[in-house]
Image (cartoon, rainbow, N blue to C red; front, side, top):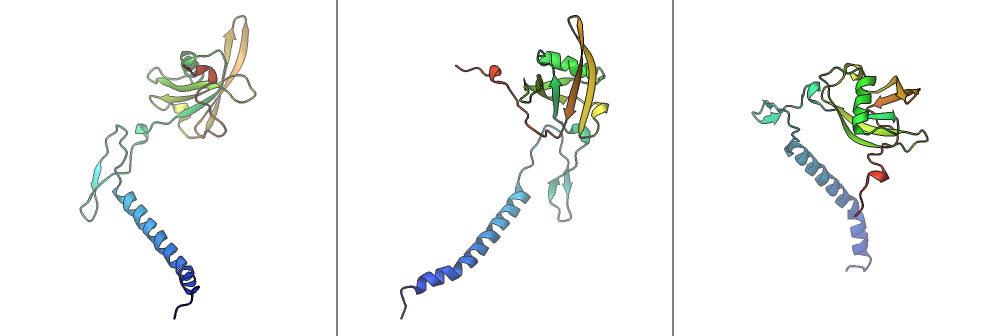
Length: 173
């Protein structure tokens, strides 16, 4: 003879078992997906290697020169546009002529200092930025009759807020 409350007690006792089965199933699914996903191809050649069981797998090693690093540039004078930023970076970092600078974004700084923030890519990593971290470059810039000291901060850690565009850059129709 079954009592009315017994089925509730039974389900309550089986709940940890169902949770365990769910966790194990999710783990197996994640492991399956991670082993059978297609690698993202960024345009560089991926070498296939053969493991002990004869399966062809993509090599996970890539040369450091193939890796594109995005840098953040802070301290840009407020009157600079993208072309001005490129020229400023080439001058401040004393770049070789074979290194191109691409400004990916340029926006007003949200911080109290007056200026702009940009994100940059280089066609080849400059020697002065060979390690990851943060670098400061100072240069004197002529504005009319006056000379001002500009300190540019380049980093790869992106700590803090990095705007990618300013309100005035938006076009609303």
